[in-house]
Image (cartoon, rainbow, N blue to C red):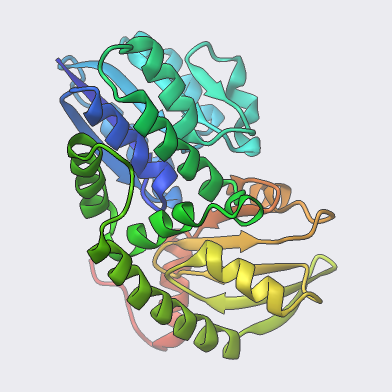
Length: 303
């Protein structure tokens, strides 16, 4: 039998559980979702025939209370396991198949589960190193811990994209004795860092400032490197309370370095969620259409 996984599309904490499950020699089908796709797509995916799946995993995604009520009445409820670490998802921790820990990342929570389920199927030492790097990157510990390998993993994810990153690091973890980067990967990263620096300079020049709910907010339109960009913009503009990075095709990412700003609460009020210093929310289809109609005045949606 196979396993089914639904996870977050946007970072290595979302895609790494796929890699870990493949390393356990499991046959899997998986779906990578944007935050604003979760409400609709989870129903679509789990509404089909699930008899071929032994386990159903959801990682690094927050479900709504309505979705949990729906799951409670499904015949496959015993197959499902959910692992998340967003504080806005804490309300779901009372369900027996949900594991939520805000001090972990989804990858580290899922890894602990897999270690117990498949104790003889993993090279634990190498994988534990990888999982620690993912944790440091996702919770932004890498700066304090000087874990530059974690940052390099994030940069490689931006270069490769979802599917290629999954396959590349699955093969790398499967075949190589040590978790280290090749000279070619290092060269690619040097080139990419120059690109990041140019990207930051361009976005810094286009930064707009606003006041929102008594906060001083810096806003940019950005599709890539949003965690790093948020940190760099905050460093350059300490007068701002947080940075909002808008990807019209995806969603809005919020980042701050200030202890007195709770972005999780702010994101929840806007239909999203996340952590205190790193959160986000989606952009609805209706809002995307509204943006298009404002830019292209007189345009009409075709049937």
